[in-house]
Image 1: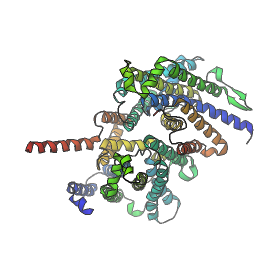
Image 2: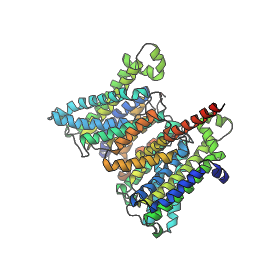
Image 3: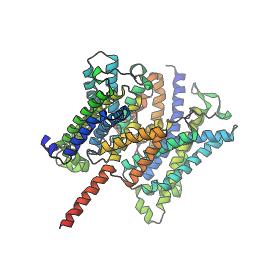
Image 4: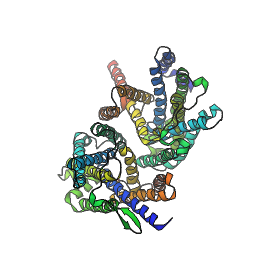
Length: 319
Length: 291
């Protein structure tokens, strides 16, 4: 498995990029380091969603809930209990995966739009509880000022922590998607009936994919708390989930690295447009409309297609 | 729990259900005829409420509200006609996921446009003098305005039923929902039938917004909280089925208001639980879906 990663044509490029990102904090001002870290967290979330949407073909409409649940878990554990610190870091993703298992178990029974609707209603249930249970979750005030272990107290240290976890997660995701399991998942996306006919348990595969994706979303949620040190109910609201959806669409949802590009573009857009105008969602809406009209495969998908076409044409020229 | 509290909560729930129904009937109509899961429907509802505020303020007096009740849906109809002709009519062949994200983009744009035009403050519309005060009904007391809503809901349902089943154009739109190409072959301009269905559905969102205006603070963000409820209602009722939208709205509105009697803090949990149970028992919705 590792050999395949090393042999992949992008390996050298990725290694160089990671190295570049490792030395960046020494040159960049604090603000940009923070934005970069936010991009990693958001990318991880978008990639985890793409595991089930782009590669699994499921209408995972309320992915943000798992991110939010993990963030709330670690926030509450660090704030309200005196358990060792690392337990919170582990409990967040695990709880997200358990909730993913429960919600997914119900959802895989339904198909497409109904799947999405059931997930939105179950996810909204969690949002409502977090929103109303004022004494436990802080309601719409959220939980500010979450204490972090001293080693993660500086921005530079948390940047490195987030980057390392992000890269490890990417490697795992790549391995999962290139494994027989990943191929089966993509086969199910393309033709569920035929997969069922050759004896694949479609629902079980989809459920496993959901649990994995929600686990990664949980890791993203924990990293968000490491970066922001606060949680709020917007993390669980459905608009965030659709925003992640936009990211993977923007980047290209049938590609592996597309969601990273999409997340980086959205976070950068929000940050830099947000400086000039408070109407940044208007800009986001316009970008999304142009995207759907002209680049339905996403930016990465578009270039991949172009690239393939050029190779094919070059091949023709040789003959 | 005494009976009067129960019955007045039930009636309040019924009136809330009627507003939900007016909005969901429009959403369901668009879903049924055009197959567009329109997230921007919530924004149009919000625009309806804000437009009602502006019209009631300009006209003023006791007739202001009644003019707003007619003017707000017309204003929303105009906006949706422009949106349909400009962008939507090119997109009907796309898959549902794209349409969903596309209408989400429209709702983001409309949300910010509302912020630009009306600002972020709370707005209120005064209840017309005719509908102030309350009446006693079934042993409980109910604001007159809520009684008015309970009457309006069935009227909208009947009007929509007559339109889709008895008028020629309604029949054409139902036929276009089933087989667009065949209707086109018969020499009917399907594009305009779709545009009209879209405008009618959206103007119901505007009507819903105008109807709710006197009972709540009109504010940004009311679109996002409503649209998800509306989608769930339409789904549990059966996509595109108007009577399903009615049944879903009743379930949603009544469970929420009766939930207040049982567990006030988490009253809003009950309708979501009801939706989950219904979707698990009947995954395709209560009534027959046109999809």
